[in-house]
Image 1: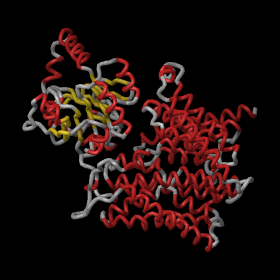
Image 2: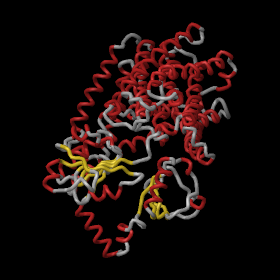
Image 3: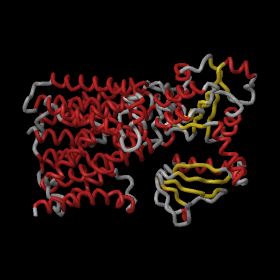
Image 4: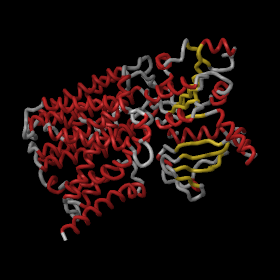
Amino acid sequence: MEEHGSLISLVIVIVAAFLTPIILHRLKLNFIPVVIAEIIVGLIIGQSGFNIVDQDVWLETLSTLGFLFLMFLSGLEIDFSAFSNKKKETSRMLPGKEEPNAFAAALMIFTGILVLSFGLSYLFVLLHLIEDAFLMTLIISTISLGVVVPTLKEAHLMKTVIGQIILLVAVIADLVTMILLAVFVSVNGSDGGNMWLLLVLFAVGVLLYFIAKRFKNKPLFEALSTSTVQIGTRAVFTLMIVLVALSEYVGAENILGAFLAGVLVSLLAPNHELVRQLDSFGYGFLIPIFFVMVGVELDLWSLLSDKKMLLLIPLLMIAFFISKILPLLYLRKWYDMKTVMASAFLLTSTLSLVIAAAKIAERVGVITSQMSGLLVLVAVLTCLITPVVFKKLFPPYMKEEKRINIVFVGANQYTMPISKELKSALYDTVVYRKKSDAEENNLSNSLFDVEELDDLTVDTLENNGVFAADIVVFATGDLEQNAQLAMAAKSKGTERVIAHVEKEETEKKLIEEGIETFSYFLSAKALLRALIESPSIISILTNKETSLYEVELMNDNYEGLTLRNFPFTGDVIFVRIFRGNESIVPHGDTELRLHDRLILTGSKEYVDELKVELEYGG
């Protein structure tokens, strides 16, 4: 009977995790992060609500694995290319102001956050509200990357200077607070004082990184990366479990090993498909169980019955905000007060690491279960409030321009006319070529926007801001050079990279790295076949008024809207909708979903306007 009850509890939690995003969507509560909704659902079915879930070994094991995987993905989420600061971000300065150095500004701000957090923590100690200033410093200074990154993406700020500063502050906070948490555990654990053992963990991590880097592109591993073997996925899980076990062995917390594994995988620049698989497994199964169980274990009524705990909730919220707003005033040299205030609110959001710190501190006996629950509750409240306030406060003119920058590397009879045809209110295009190519081909710059460079090496292209473009097309006459430059562009963080290749093995390798390819031979062959089988296809492909266009739905204002009620009328027809791997024939009752890829036909001018509205929010 006990086993039967155990399975019932597991089923309840799994079903709750499954239904949560569906309920959010149906109630149009998209402003609430799914993980927060999962905690709220956990409150309803747990101790604070109907109390229908019994904690047992099944749920404890899956919840722990979800926690470890969350920490792993937190490490994987860190984009170390952001530290290079070599991209030319979009500038939105006050008149007469120069743009700040994003990394230097972020470092200065986080230093201020850390110092101020310690001061506020010490004040809490003096008021006898808490006992451990080190723990509270860690909690106040942490920032949730899981809230910051999607909020910046949704607001189209990732490529602006202010967006890069906010992102870097969150990244630095993630790294530093995790290290501080490891130090905290070493000092307060049963084997306290063995901090030097942490060096063993980091040394093993560095060793594993170099081993993985050496064997990553070996033919054997490439051959085993497909079909049922999936050697890349196996390697990632092996790395995580080895480092988690080693963390436990040296007396550190197991989440440090999981986080370190994520950081190492991020440094190895895994292909997009592998990252997608890991995200799908984590956020599709294990992590929801963990967040639901966080809510299940939280005794809300016990917290609310304690006057001291009630007093701490607003005080902690205020401390979180003060610790961010005062250091961010440093940005007043470049930005207006509204921008600074909005940025401070977004950086106030905190979740995963606060939950981690609270649970660990409770386990080692530094805080009570009540205090642990209070910290989780405050973290949930910050994630509910801060993104909404950020969107309301942040000035619209600070967002990046709704233009797509396209760079063609290589000037020929294909790239130059295409660059001219694409240039519009939506696209900015430029062609780069070697000076020697201009002399040999006798191509004029008078009709086209062409930049001449001494050479087409990675350093030269990077120094000219090529890799900062939204789309880079490599179409030089040297096919090997196209492949090499495309790989370099992808590693430098270019969103979309397209390369001209003709060899099948090269094409396969580039596609695995997330690079799109085209071949003149295969394109001509496909076009000839289409011309023979369906002569009208040529008209669709060549007539600007009937061409096919792809638009990705990124504006959540249109989430759940049926095509019948679509508010825009114009010279455009919905031809197809691609949703993940699903192909949908659109009709009046078809509901639009975020990230749908809409295939449209109609006038280019109207499609461009629609693209701005649907992809960039108008």
